[in-house]
Length: 506
Image (cartoon, rainbow, N blue to C red; front, side):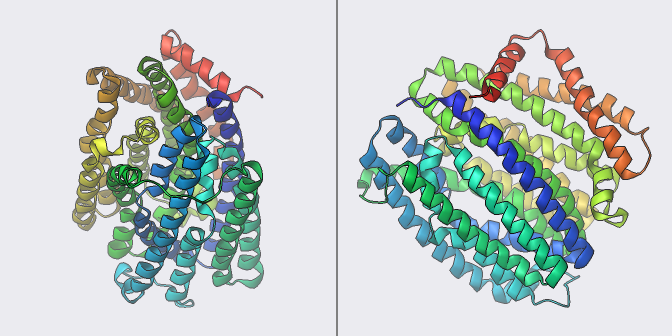
């Protein structure tokens, strides 16, 4: 069965945008409310505990991604029995994973104080906060999260996104009520637990109604389990690197610099991760289609598509980087107050951090969709270990700069040269061709960023007026420069055609 990849990608992209707009506005309102009512240290504590539990989620081993990879072929071949067996295997393993995360999470309770240098809020019990955060993390593993794999395999992320949008809206409204009316931070966390339960139950009902032929039953052959295990080995090491980059920074920062600095950094990082989430709409929209295409189409066709998507990636990530550079400070002042603003040099460092991290995401999406995790399985482990080591060393010398610099350095010297090699080998192309495209992306970024920033620094009113003037400039100037530079290239024209196809009304 050949999935309508472009149609589904466009549908996923549109509803993903709706989801992320809701997921951008309401969480920002909640975070701003926490700062005003409870203080910046509460955000620091929240960032710390979320980072610790993200590390514990390594117990999942990337199992869900591996199972969905095998489902691509089963769904394409309309093999209902195999799909049900994979779903049942997924269900059993996820429940074991939930128990492991819960047990290890509870075992960490006596050691929580070692992760916090200072600035602990005096009017709450950090252990109660931690337990509620832990419950919010593990509850999905014991319910119906495994049913999402069917929607993933059919490239129907839009259904998951629509449910999540409604539930997220309810969650944030409840949290705002608890913040402003009851001023109870514990109930703020309870709302997350309850809405996570609701999200999984509603999705499970929809899956059962739309795809009644699939249920969790049957068993896989030992050889099939072994094959899944082989994929997981590479994906586990891949996930370690991602967790270190996403979580270690906050843990090291809290341990060495305190909760206040972690909270301020968290405001900046939250904006960056919001952009990650928006870009993730794009990746999630195309991942299942890529997996189907790698099975159904020739390598030449897939390489042609890859070049288009990587070009679009360079464009979008470059433009987002320019927006961060020009809008970051005004937004933070408006959102969190002038006392919670870093120096512009930290902002520039964060922009570089964002760009080097996201520029090769299309490479990673292709590797995930093609199950190529084991081809460079040690790369994330090496990169993560280098990043963590440099974090601990440099934070004691240059503070916050050391943590950001460590991530940039590990990405530039390890991930950027190493990560694309598996895909280069798969497509049987010359590496020089790909790295030349990366270098072209960096040059385009500089040409977009410098003129836009030089224009924006002359706009100096109050933060709201600055944003209202700078935002249209950031939309027009860098994109106009990029199109002027690339409008004659073949890949630009084909990329525009693909973008139009994704957003075409169905």
